[in-house]
Image (cartoon, rainbow, N blue to C red; front, side):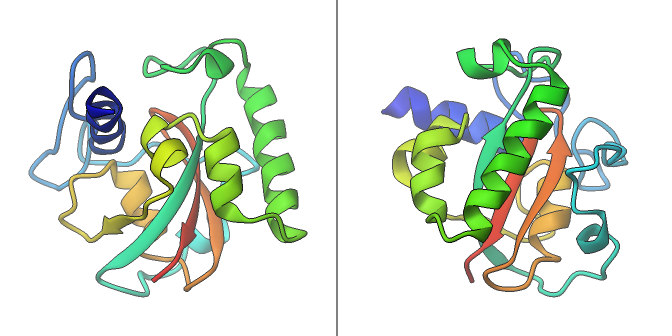
Length: 161
């Protein structure tokens, strides 16, 4: 359980064993800018908004693929980015048709902490989270779901508060 908590913290903060970089002076991970969001599953319309809150509580599902340096889950290690996009679309459809977010976290998230605990994460501009995660989390409306890409994969994020 402790090892899982450490891995979760490393995944979300971008800090930990084998993880490149860390927070910069611009409060971002691995440099001053977020990754370009080029995938069709990314919620670009939400990311284009101004932040809606200074703090938010979010839950997330992480879906990775084999070409990422931060792949820790055997499901991700066997998946291409295109396969990951297909998985994200499938999960979004399940959420849209009423499948509980927490049930999907437990079953499908490749972030062991969110899969095991179902807990939410506090997001704020100075939170020690990867920049892409913060950018989306602070732009979501309560109960809205969006997708962002980071060095760890696709994060399906739901704002709960």
